Image 1 (cartoon, rainbow, N blue to C red):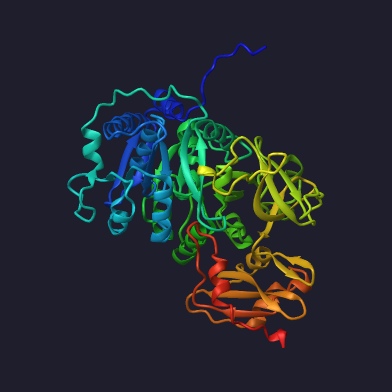
Image 2 (cartoon, helix red, strand yellow):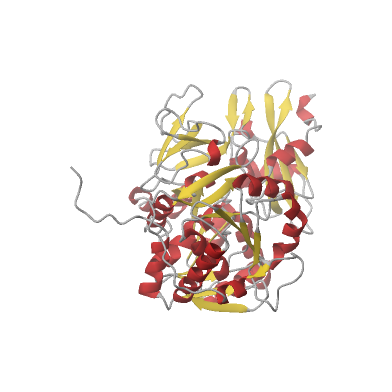
Length: 542
C-alpha cells in the first residue's frame, strides 16, 4: 500500500518559483566584475533565468547535457544556474583556481557544450579553447558595451537575455534527474565528478536552512563569500532563495577591505567562507579600527578553523563563529559545530573547545569510524579512525563510474579523513589519511598542531608535514609563513605550543618559509610542501 499524499517532485526549479511567488521583491545585490554595485530581485532573476533556458534550448541543449559556468558569485551567475537546471540540463561549475591542464581534463570529461564565463576568465578560455572540442558556445556574463575580443566568437550574456522570451516551462522531470556536476580535488589521480540530483540538492537545502545548521531565515542578509564554483556555495544559492533572505554577491573582490565594505553597506547578518578570508578580514579590521555593526554569525569551513579566528570574532566584534565540515561528495554539508543542549549548558570556554571541532551530523547524515580492518571504533573523543559517511545527499558513484564501486557493503562512503567522535557526538578531523603523521606506531594530528601554531601573533600561516626519521618512521616539521615585517625563532614557536599539545607531538624543527601554497579550494597543499621539503633532513635524524 502507498500513502495518499501528493506526488510533488523535489526539483530545484521549484525553489526559485517559490522565491518569485512569495518574496519576489527581496533584493539581490552584486559587486559586478565591471565595477558598479548592481541590484535586482528574485522575481527579476526568475524571469531572466527562464530567458536563459530558452536561449539554451535554441542552442540545442537537451535534458542531461552539461552546461558549464566559470564565474564569480553574482546575480547573473545565479540566473544561469537556474536557467540550466530548470530545463533538466546539468550545471557544471568550473573552478578557475585549477591549472589549465586540470580544466581541460574536466571540461572534456564532462563533455560540456556551453560555457558561461565572466570577463575575468575569458583570456583563460581563449588559451585552452582548441583543447576543449565539445564546447560549441561561449557566453560572457556581461553586456555588449563591455564585451571584449579576448574570447573570439563569444556572445554577450545580456544579448541572450534580451533575445529570448521568459515563457518557459520548468521541471516536469523525475526528481532524480541530475542537476549539477562538481569535480573534486580530494581524490588521487584525475579529478572525479560528483553528479548531484535535483532531489539531493532539494533535501540538502531543507537541512541547511534548519536552526541547528546554517540557521538562516527571511530576515537574514547573506554574503556568500564561498564561491558558487566550490561545492554549490555550501548550498546557499539554494537555501537563500528558499527562505527569502537577501543575497549580497561579492563578485571578484574578496580582500578584507572589500568584504568589510559590503558587510557594512548592505547590513549583512550572516556570511560563509574559508578561514583565509576571515583572517584577511580580521587583519583589515585591526589595522583600520573598523567595526562590524550588523554581522551576527559566520560559518567557516573548507579547512579547520584556528582558535585565534573564533576568539577574534567573538571577543573583539561580538560575532559568533560556527565551524562546518563537508566535501564535494556530501553536497557539501556533513557536520556543523552548533551547540547541542548539553554543550549549550557548559561555560563559554568549554563551549569553545566544541566550536573548534567539525561538529555533529544533521538529519540526513550518518557517520561512523572504522579501523583498517573495518571494525567500528568507539565515540570516546580519543580513538582515531577512518571517517565514513552515508545519506541522501552523499555520493553513491562518481560520474561515468570513475573509481568503480566507492561504497562499502553497508552503503558508507570513505571520506579519506581520519577523525575522532566524542561522547557528545562531535566529530573532529585529525588529518587527511594521506597527511597523518605516523610516529613510533602512533598517529600525530598535523591539523591540530598547525591550528595552534597559526594562532601565534607573528604567524600568517602554518603547516605541519611528516618528515622521515630513522627511529620513529616520521616526525612532525612545522613550517611557518610570518606576517609581513615579523621575524621569529624556532624556540618561541615551540614554546607557544608547549602545554597545548602532547609532548611527543612537539615538532622536531621549525622552518620559516616565504610561501605556503594553497590548493584550488583554499586548503594548504601539503603535496607541494612535501615535494619542496623532500631533501630536508631533521636535526634529530642524525
